[in-house]
Amino acid sequence: MNDINEMLEKLHEAAAQDKELRKKLLLTQQADEPMAEFCRIAGEYGFPIDLGDLLVLNETLWGNMLKSTNGGATYPIEDWADAYEMFICGL
Image 1 (cartoon, rainbow, N blue to C red):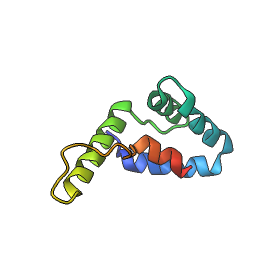
Image 2 (cartoon, rainbow, N blue to C red):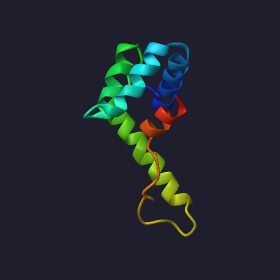
Image 3 (cartoon, rainbow, N blue to C red):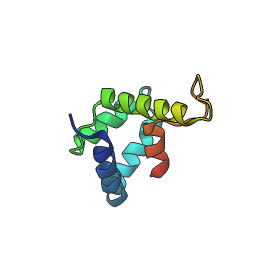
Image 4 (spheres, rainbow, N blue to C red):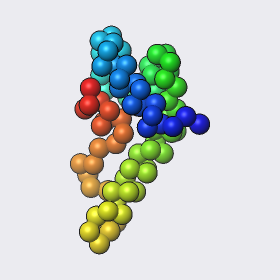
């Protein structure tokens, strides 16, 4: 399994240099399945990101945020972003 964080970082760097890649990644927000389309496009450009790995990363991020909340939260806060959303915002 690839290190998902490293792969996302490399993809972000590539998208910063390649306007067409950046545009395609931003357009994934309009897809019926945005995260799946994001992974498909990333793979086409040589960044094999598996949807399952992206979902596991989200669970890890949310779990860590829940643990870091004073007293421990019992549910994710509605406005917490996931890895895909944070990536898109960074573009």
